[in-house]
Image (cartoon, rainbow, N blue to C red; front, side):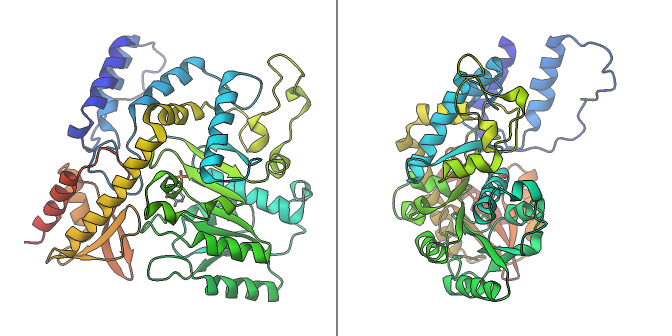
Length: 447
Ligand SMILES: *Cc1c(COP(=O)(O)O)cnc(C)c1O
């Protein structure tokens, strides 16, 4: 175990020199599962065969999709959490207290009212399902838990064209179907057009379709755009519609300096927020949260403990906060500790500074692109995402070549019909030099 820990720490210290590499043929077959292998051998296979085949998002020039970079303190927290092996579904023990504290901190950081609460989740996808289920109970009452959607009118959820696929997926899971999602047109900066939103709501109401929720996006996965959350909150308020905010990574602009801080102004007015700690703050996978302004409603949406899980006044079965009452999982791990450790060891000032840095870097990459004769900026840089087209060649090929060479990881996106390279910078290890080298490598493919 000590040797294994050293191997982990060595790898962590060398992240900068360890880009993604193709996993190739891995000798990890479980064909001999009936025979016991010595732990030393198994640990060696983990350290030498499996660990080097990581996704590579710990590397400073990994900007594909939105993958957090990982931070040391959370590795320590994972070790402690695994050693405790707590089941955070319920009962009175320390892990539940840590989770409650982390949730309260997240709610306060969002600026939500004092009685807001929430639950740690695997990520934003799961949190979105929880949030929209709570919206449904508010709109149609708790009876929907008994009878399902059988007696409900058709419903609609409104989100920007650039909203994440997890919203349609949540509607699928909830039985309303993906067609219940109304994609609202965006403006030149990628923000949902409020007039188009109002028109869509009016049209649905006229046709007997019940608006279930408006989803504001704080940081769109494609281009890093932010909806005008204050404007969206005003509209949701005047229409009496639940406001959910997908703040998977954009939530963390709450810790950044202006102008990026202001992008998420208005988030405090949400009825629910979904966010990820495994993206921008770099907390190890998986770690997300669902925050809900109305704690009683949240609990009423999910609580359903059978007799064998009843709480007691005292002892281990005590405690008035059982997280199983706030979501879909009964048995659940101690996800909160790694975020708690990240906040404590980094401090919010340094976390915020890293987020501000990443936004500055995306803006700088945008300037490099605009200064290049062979690259073309495809969307204004709003936060930490930079998307650009190339003059020659296939962007998928270019992205794959740079990945295979270990130079940089871009992902690809098609914007207004133009295939682009896309960088989403969420790594505190990224430096300006990393940007310059990567842009030079892209330019080199154009000669
Ligand atoms: C990543 C992401 C999601 C999905 O979150 P998971 O943690 O992967 O489930 C949703 N919305 C946005 C904007 C995202 O970036």
